[in-house]
Amino acid sequence: MNNLIHDYPKLSIAEIQAGLAAREFSATELAEAALMRIAQIDPLVKSFLEITPDLAITAAQGIDQAIASVSAGSLPEECGTLAGVPMAYKDNLNLTGTHTTCASKMLESYISPYTATSISNTLIAGALPLGKLNLDEFAFGSSTETSIFGPTHNPWDLERVPGGSSGGSAAAVAAGLATATLGGDTGGSIRQPASFCGVVGYKPSYGMVSRHGAIGFGPSLDQVGPFARSVADAAAVTDAIALYDPADTASQHTSVKMTDYLTLGVKGMRIGYVPELLELDGLTAEMRRADEDAMQRLQDLGAVLIPIELPHARAALAAYYTIGPAEAFSCLSRFDAVRYGYAERNASNLTELYERSRTQGFGPEAIRRIVLGCYLLSAGVIDQYYYKANQIRTLIRADYQQAFTICDAIVTPASPRAAFRFGEITDPVSMHASDIYTVPVNIAGNGGMSLPIGFGDKTGLPISLQIIGPQLVDQNIFQVAAALEETYDFERLAPMVLEELITPMSLEGGAA
Image (tube, one colour):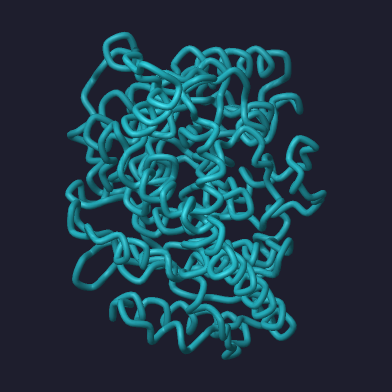
């Protein structure tokens, strides 16, 4: 068991399933190893808000029983494509019987009465549910500093943020606490923390993965997607969760399997890049050098690099921070302290109940966005801002559609800089600028992936490239990412996860 605790974080999904088939270990042993590791390391990283040992062990035992019914060397089909894979989930995704807090006092005591479709699909595929992960409150943020439970720490440097809002999901993979996780991306909340933590983070095209059971921030922008340490693992999770769901009105019928595109290479593929985006203020020199090196590698692999224009990309942040708060205001109006959510018991009337409960239940960033959204949707202002923002959205979509008539994928930086220190950025406008490369993709509805491409010369921190595909043609993203990934050779398990941190600990003593 001790060897498995050390080794399991480095196992890919394919290696986990091969090990199960060969009877090298059981799914129950995997679950126990994962839970022990969380107990030992997560007090430093603080990625988990709730650990679910009973759910993980029960799922593992079911897999072991199914495996016992077939001969060694194979897995029964009913085990699923994620059989035995330790997974965890961003805490704005409902999972029956667990807290779904959105890292907010407003939902601190809320227990999920149902399971989000994205989580359900992983469980049907055989994943082992380890628990729920930290995030910025209601996914409002780029650093996971707005969580009422405290920040998550970047496993590469515990004094730095993991990014956000899905910081817990990214950090858990980088620290080897879970093989894969699910997060949510409204304006970069998968790709930016993946970049900061040196893991693969994929935002599917809008409608590919069901939003049912995800507590909404901006319903026209939100998308659920995976974090993993490799493109192949991200593809395996995507294939399990990218299924049509009638419970989500935006859900699309897709039959493409991303795992079918991992070995095709990029020879002859047309890769677009935007010279203007490499000259934006705030993009660090080491980021630019790493991105230019990645483009050269793609060219060496046989891809054709094509300079393109995205004329309205600079307007994406303004459009996003109009549309996003407006939709957030609408989504959060349901938390009225009457049906569910935090309620101030000393209120003397209904109006006071609303005012005091929402004032105390929401944190500063949530209140900022609620107030802004209310203003943007008010009479006399909605025409000037909200409607114009949606006109810009139309132009941005048209830009991408035009670009993809001449290229098969687009590459840009994933983030203008590497992970910053806690408290280093306090100005909301500067914080919002962290999403300058990711927001346009949500506005357009395309898919995008953050792929690690090395480490900064000065900081030693992870650097990533963003790969964008035509809408609902996300297989192009995986094809490019898998080919480029092969040209790099570096360890994606954060170095702070050292052998000396792993001390013998029983499951009862450490993961209850």
